[in-house]
Amino acid sequence: PNNDLTLTDIKNRLRNKFNKMKKNNVKAKNPESENEETALFAGKFKGQCNHCGKYGHKGSECKDKTSNQHQNQHQDHKKDNGNRFGNEDAKKTPNFEDSCKYCKKKGHTISDCRKRIANDHRRNEQASAAEHKKNQDRTSEHVLVATHEVATYSGTQANRFAWIGDTGASSHMVNTLDGVTDITDSDVNIKFGNGDIVKSVQKGIFRGTVMQENGNELQVALEVKYVPDLWCNLFSIGSAIKKGLQLKNIGESYELSKDKNTLVFDRQSSAGDGCTMMVHIEPQPAGNEHAAAATNLNRRRMDTNDLHRLLGHEGEAKVKDMAQYLGIQLYNKMQPCEHCNIGKARRKKISKENTRRSDVPGERLYVDLCTIHASSAGNKKHWLVAVDDATDMKWSMFLKQKSELAKALFEFLRSRRNDGFPVQLIRLDNSGDNKRFQRRASTEGFADMK
Image (tube, rainbow, N blue to C red; front, side):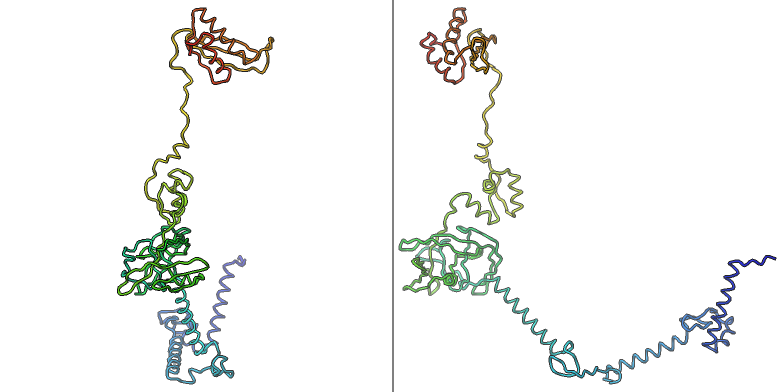
């Protein structure tokens, strides 16, 4: 017989050995398992429990697992009751021998100190409130004049040149950008005395001329905020005093002075039962169209033709692209530009072909003189050419000097007359020799020739 050991035989022997060892191990742990194993074939499940390792039931049906769960639930319930009713055995506070470094009490550390946590929370709230108030103050201005009762001064309705002196205004304010340069964006809230709030959208430098009633004039430059909803211009007395000007009362008016310059609020306006002091300030003109265009450029709204001139007369497409890049809103259509048309103009082309040729041979001649660098055998270096307009017949004459042109040409014209072809018209350029020939034509008997 064949007694060779195969791989299948080895697997079967090892499997049997492992089952025996596993069975003996279960018996050692649970001596009662022998009785249970005898009844394995009577039950439905014949496998091994995943929880206790016994045969005959599943892990979900294991009695040991169920009893352990009930015991754990009972312990948890007891622990919860101890925490709820202050059971010292269930809930014990760590005993810290050292006292808290913050409140000096024992039983906790500084990280768990309730007093420190409450104080830190209170300080954070106070710091947040202070920062919020600081931001509000930084982005807000104040004005005390809040009504429309101030409507006339010197018997005339208040116009855009009238500036009301306001001691409660925190800065100079205008309702128009006339005379304002160096304009930049500014998002600031303006709070009036009655609680109303309006927006300041831009700021800049206002340059104007103060027109006093006594005829004196004073040039001023003020840092102003542009408030479109403001019904009049406000002159901040506080800002002027902060700049070093001195406030003085003179009768019913008051003045601001520094060095030898004095600004007097000499216009009165009716305001209910009282009056308000004003000053008349006219904005300075921009000076030229480029300065005006630059001012409009800062306003973020501009005429298309002004931006065209400001950019050096660029084309319409580039003007629109630049406006979009700078965030400028354009209005009005591009109009024909006189300067662009002059720059693009050119001389009319001169036709190289004569459309009005003469029909009579010898009637019209074209004459020109040119110089040759190399001299001929007869030491002549100037070439005089005459062309007949009707027949394209050409005649060549060679001269030693340009001054011989008149003499040679008169001799040629006499020969043409004698041959029965009198010349009626000669076309020349404006050289000096040709002009001398023209002056001598009448004395040489060719007065009827053009």
